[in-house]
Each structure stands twice: as structure tokens, then as C-alpha cells.
Length: 157
Image 1 (tube, one colour):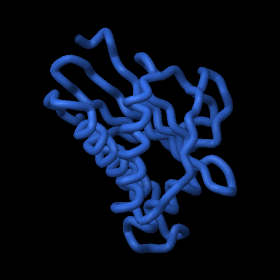
Image 2 (cartoon, helix red, strand yellow; image 1 turned 90 degrees about the horizontal axis):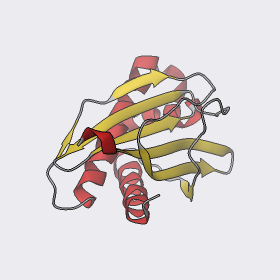
Image 3 (cartoon, helix red, strand yellow; image 1 turned 135 degrees about the horizontal axis):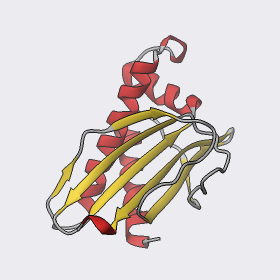
Image 4 (cartoon, one colour; image 1 turned 45 degrees about the vertical axis):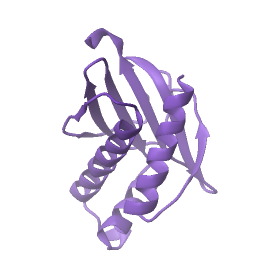
């Protein structure tokens, strides 16, 4: 893993969660999930960050509890009233904001963000393409909330 990217990603996640979603979480460095591993996450938001020299993908895996919490805080509604579409929109917006904040910390290069994608997950980890730059788990006293993976696609350039 890249220590500079790990620090930049923690900073980006902290800033976005605190300022836009009115929440905080504990952070810990995490191992990347291996294909077939059981995971406590139900949703994935993904965004690609394109640069002149490299391409980076940010994957945001979220538990239902965390997704509902941040979506409700973001929209100012009860977590029980949320639709899947609202959760999808909030997680895509979270991925977009974290990617933008991360890109601003990665140096002088001009970065372009793709349109975020969303998917409901099975409980089993899939293969994530590229080389790991950062892997951070978010948790609270009740357990894991989310896992953020930053992967570099060396084959793209």
C-alpha cells in the first residue's frame, strides 16, 4: 500500500463525512478482501479518477446500517423511510465527493472523475482490479460500517 495515498484517503473521507454527511467514524488500516471472503457490506459505489499519468478506482463498500445512517443525515429524513434509490444516490454522491477531495490531494496532475456507479452486493467479496494504493475500514462500537479501497490501474497508461 502507498502510505501517502492511505493518509490522503483518510483525510478525504474524514472531511467529506464530517462536512457533508454530519457524521464521523473510527478508521483502521485494512487488508483488502479476498475473492470469496464473506463481507458485512450490502452496497458498493465506484468511481474512476482519470489522470494524465495513471488511472485510479475508488470502491466504497457499505453496510446497510451505515448507508441508511448517512443517507438519512444527508437528506434530513428518517432512516426507515429511505428507498433503495435514495441510498444509491447518497452513496454515489459520497464516492464522488471523496474522489474529488482525494484527487485534490494527489498532486499537480489534472484529474477527471467518471460518473459514479452503484451495485447491491452479495455477501461474498469479488475481485477488484488493479494494485492496492489504500484500504481503509470504517467502524463504530457496533462493528464495521464501510470499507474504502483505492486501486491503481497500471495497465491503463
